[in-house]
Length: 361
Image 1 (cartoon, helix red, strand yellow):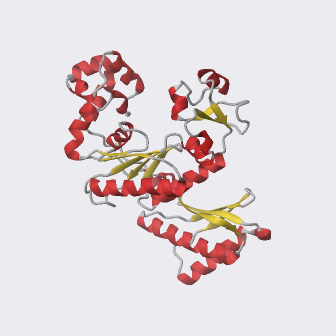
Image 2: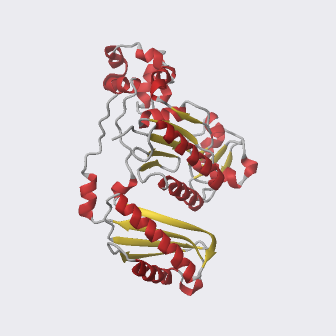
Image 3: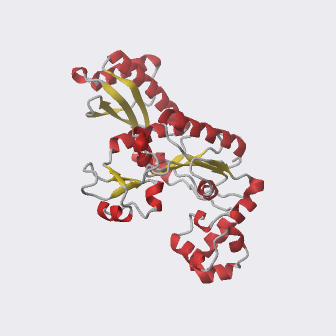
């Protein structure tokens, strides 16, 4: 395996970002998203802007308590269909660069570009392209870190201002870690970080001067983990969603359509993409889950056996058959999603492969 290249992408609070994109008048205001459609009357906080976070608002707080923490807090009802739609579009951009990406809720993602780019420099260029596309196509600002492992990639993003991009090159790694704030050592549990801060240790340079025994006196069994992080070691793999036994391709129409020829054409393109991705990832899909979203916000779902391969003629016929299912009574379709599911035995085969990576530093 060549040089490991990991990209970390952070959206801040994607929910707040989507609301500010759609409501520019909210820019700069402390903002919270309710976990219900009832807005500020009931519920708890599900999303927090940086301005609200600075005033003590946290996810999981009741809306009443959050309002006490921040009297000028703007509270909006959650629009979860809109957030999921944006998140799926972000996934499409990720999938153009790698199938190996791991998402954390709707705010963070790790992408493993190892083998798809030559080195960190090419990874940095790819990350910049992703950042620019998020801004141009989704109107979302991202903070990005690029490094040789997950710890350093996320630490790079946490060490800079929101909206920036940072690459931790090999010859810069030691100096980067020495300047790193303790809160950027994110794999270390927060309790351990708080213990170190209480003893006055807040920078990597200070922590590097401590012996392993002293670290163990302060944070106990977490000391070996801190020692590894201080030397830039993190073998944690990016765990892609395909370990769950599914693979999805999607198309969102700029303008909803009920034309069967249009639906069949887009379905054929999706199937070609799906088969290509399955082949590239040794993924043996046997069941196809078809989901469409209609322009009136309703949706339809069907399941269909997935042939192991399709000739050009079979692809055309299969696509026309699926298109005929999608638009009963001429309902305009705004989104098509095709999900392949693989047999349980294949899922076990993939999931039981060793996924812990061994890296030399």
